Length: 396
Image (tube, rainbow, N blue to C red):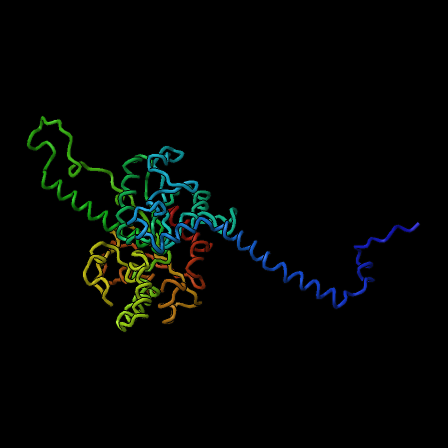
């Protein structure tokens, strides 16, 4: 007895008559009708996956105004763990397995970013530099989130204070220090180094003026003042600084925005003044990207809004290894387009930085510049070659 034929078999399907014109039309209409719902569902899922960017984007655009109003949406400068701010004392850092201080890597995101960009990409299994480093090496990775709408120098001061608190709280746990910054995060790192050096210089001068602690009264048991008491400093532990796509000489996008606003204001008609006024509402952090302003004096200067304003040169820290990593949309690095457009958001010439290419720089400066072709600004955060370079240098 023959078995009944499977209606889903190839032979059965081959014997079915082709769909009529009306059937085909009905299927098309059905797909068209479902498209908005499918698209809405996709947008919803994408939105939920990237919901953590909402607050950082708001702060990047208007964070200075939020902070001025003490708005609860203004992001505080803090270490982050499990999606929440964590106080330094609550980090509960431990030494390496052999009891020695542990190399510590601190990651700083760029404009409108957060710590997630260092941890995961498309899905929880798409690990990025932080988790990969902890898996492949014996380092401690810490992540910072900050209000990117504030002046770079304001965030630089806060990073200096946070790192100082870190080494004071865990003096026997935090060993060599490595800082990794993407885009604006690299400028914040450089600004923190400037203010760290400035404070060390002031403290050294204060100790020299006060003389030995017991020179006037050897029997005195009074505690030393903070100015004369030597605290551990994070600069003394800093070994490497990685600058990924950092606009060290400014952003061409912000330079164009400033120039456009300036021209519209000069035309001095009501519509152009209105447009210029709206453009000028962008945050102080964004405005600082025009010429990579790293210190307070630059944005406080009365000529700060000039087309070519004064700018304080912040040189690399002596004895620290700098790794300047430059992305490029092009295959080669020999054209003017490469220098100007670079990774699409930061020009390659700006990312390389004149201060890092100075032939008259002291010999003790340790600077390595690497160009990664066909990488845009965002893929610097997930590229395997960039990670391999980071890992190999951190393991040294």
